[in-house]
Image (cartoon, rainbow, N blue to C red; front, side):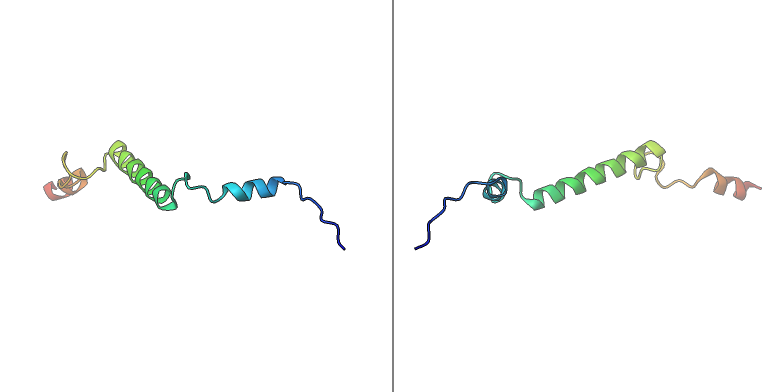
Length: 71
């Protein structure tokens, strides 16, 4: 007969048991969070460079177009 050996718990076994935890954040939440952060950063960059849309002169022509029309 074979002698049954007791298996010791390894670090790999410990990590596998925690991988299916129900308390982790779902992937779709992480994806939407990243998309939201990227959009906010994009809008902040647009605002800081003066190329924002709407409001303050969003549809006015640039000064180079006005100067060419006067000459």
